[in-house]
Length: 616
Image (tube, one colour):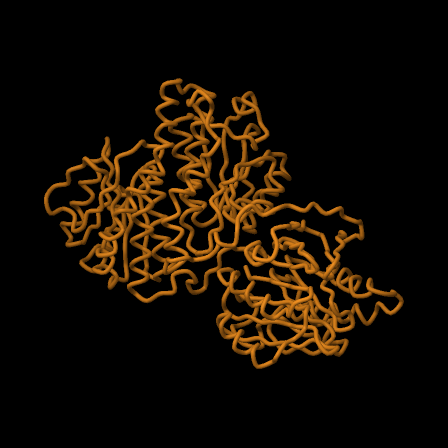
């Protein structure tokens, strides 16, 4: 969940490293640090707080070295202090190391090293790795040349239980970095007379668009002009160099106040990109080239199982509703973090789907691996091209939403919803959906970006509503059918970025307990589409008004609410059932965003959260 950047080349490393950390700060921002090779030693600067604090501290050191490693931290072991910030130096100052992940057996390793005379200055599991590399380095006296450093890292990793993405420096080997990964992403950027290590493409794309996505169990030895990759058991790896297809401008804020605001307003374009080239010539169904299953395979499936975490789990719930509604195939949705431990009985004709924006979410990756271990095919919906989940899945669908920097997911989430709607159509047309219904469905999907643009025109109205409601500390979000997951998502967004307690419920469940929370100090956000349950929703709203609760109603055009029932009304375009969750999401994103801004919260970097959750 932290960010790693390493650089070796011909330029001063410190400015390149700090620029990279600024681009990765959404991955962790408790503390940050750099280690630079210069004058025959490794010099370290690190500071609790944001990368800006580190930049001020680094300026005092007058770094001139052209090789270094850096890190921005999201705390796991040990509190947020200067001492616990990475990089960590070994007792003898020869080794510096940065680390993402969790070393599960760090306590046993630490006891071993303490008995050998090694000392520790922090509470972290990472410092244990640093000293263990130093220990093996002193033992590798029979190994000649550059491999001594590499072999010390390799032998250290033999002893590690848990996950890691690491980058390591050794004072005896200037201009060299050794890096490795297991369960935590790491990427090599291949430049001109320089190479870069990073945990996310956004940290290196300003210097090169040629990248190598390291796989679990791989170790890379990097110099300015060369690199070599081997496995943990010393097998050589022939690297595959991919090209990043988006530019650095895509990951910059531009004229917007926050990345979240920018990404909310990019949603129409992201949805167009998700659909591009994915409809049949006759306009009656969707096409997906990466699923690697034919129509007969899909007709043989008796059940879909969707696994994910966070906002992506809400997208899975929408997928469940749409697939069962239109394709008439049972769907089970599970938290990825629970699936691998539950050992639930599964139908042999099941197909698994995992959804992850980053493609690196550790719980979702573990669920994917567990399903494959039991012999099931696993498909992935993800935004991270070249990510671990994308590589390990049997097939999948890329979102093509572009980089999403704001911690609270917006355009990636609505992209997941739209792709789920497209997949429901894809399966339905293989089953019993008619040609004409398919054409109608496709036309509705194609209209979605413009409907999102129309909904975004409500931003000024929603901003004014947010100003009136930012003072409240409790909210309920209530919806039914496919909008119940959007109620959950709306509550999550408000919690994530404004720290307001919020709950999402099916509207009819309100009277079975949550109605006890209703008061003048607890507003409710209702999703009120027209259709067969409209009157049921109105009845639920009246129950709240009878108890003096305030109501913000998100209402499809053409619905007439009884006068005075809602305190605030946000109209959204009337649309097809399959695309309603996408359209209904936009107002709650804007509401949450403007409330957080009104409360003075750090929208893009909310406390305690990180963008890509790569630790259990």
